[in-house]
Image 1: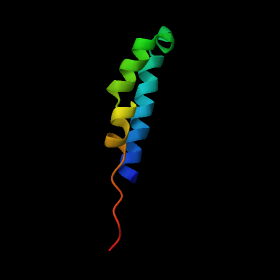
Image 2: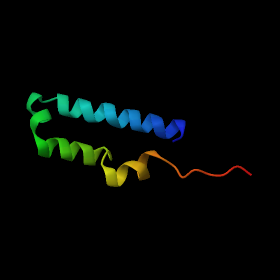
Image 3: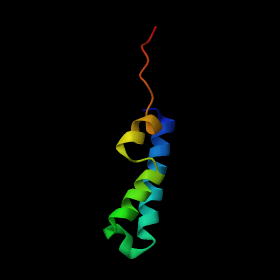
Image 4: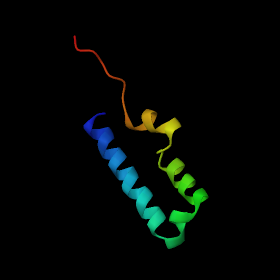
Length: 59
């Protein structure tokens, strides 16, 4: 994980929390939580592609 990708991840987590907190009942709504996770690319199938990079060997 690079510093730039880490910043993207931090922003996504904050935006995810803000989106769910904007309406008090959303934390208990399974579909709303799943939709926000997918929207912010925080699901297992998109997390690593979005927020990490392949390690390179040094020359």
